[in-house]
Length: 522
Image (cartoon, rainbow, N blue to C red; front, side):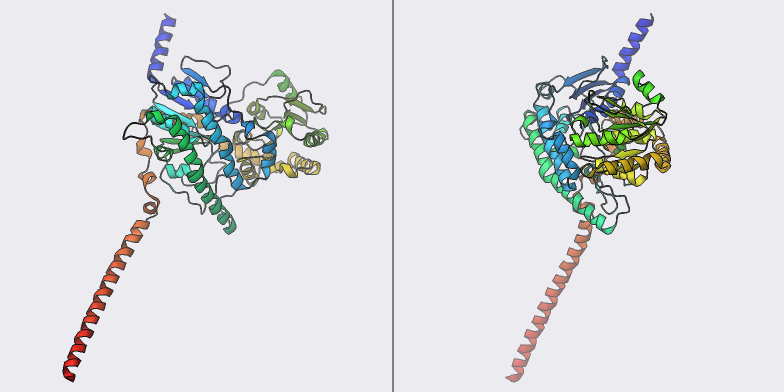
């Protein structure tokens, strides 16, 4: 009887759930580690989720979950090698803007061209209530929303971009809102504001005149069969304006205030949960560390074992002089290391950071790792490489819970100095604990808030009432230029008309006077 009741309830829960198509076109492992927590949460809340992904969710299965793999996935190293990552630390901000096109455009097309994805594109019997695209400049994938005539949401693992504002009816005020790559606050100096305007304008130009046209061409090619006579496919640019919701990997405690529309929701920290028990060897290593443990990880893409050998040896030499122990995410576990250093191919990073004996987190500045260190109240020493990592690092430095070293300028002396400063100066630890209290002080857990809004969009069939009509206004109307121009034109017309009339009247009077004078002469 109990089994029958459970079966009935399971059927009812599935029946009450929605059907979600979850798209993860970018093969970045760090992104997927965060995004899969959304997939699991939706499934656990009895929604039927079909996910197109590059990697399977390990140790997870459910009758509500269908996984469509892009396998083999796009090899990022063909366009962005480990050596490129090492060099990109010295790239200009303009080069960073252009770099997204290098691998995002190619991986967009690679995924759409995959046999398993093609089956979904050409399917006739699939229906979905919502399409979620894990967007990392893979805008062509939003065309799935058009195919299935469903509202769509974007989840952005990398943080905020100005075009989110425009899609929701807001022009980003560059006077006090810095570009997403810049480490500035909302009190920029004159030169910083000039820099911000130039970079933001360049980013706008690059997106609208380079990136989106390429994404649109890809979408038109792979979804062209959906076009009908007299009814062509929408442009990606127009489709994006109809987005229902944008979930942004940001948090109010680590970002300066900026104007925010109701269709943009922050989810920073959504993937962070209460720590799970650590493997026995790691637990013992941490528990018995009299002077604490330093955690060193460069994330999921960068491989520490492929750093230049002189850099690896420099790190190990500096660590060997410390009284603290070090756990280093290092892919070659056979590499000879000092007695106080433990190397592991993979680490339960967020769970390790929660251990009270972790005294310092050496990281590359990825968004997820930065949030994990922030949430756990651990001071951080950043060595950023590419993308938004330098921005994240410098923001933490400005907050007082971190220091940053530039990889290309890294020396044994600068590393040892930074380690000594952070391990002996309690200011960083105290500030880290203070920021952690702010980060964790939420009305509800960020995951619960994000899922609420995802379900809200499905319940309200697109949440169209959240979208301001300003999203569809031409820029000159948005800025009231038409309001200013019309009276100016009207005044100009009246002025020119009166000027013409007076000129004609004056001319007429002059002609009449000449005639009268001519008569008098006669």
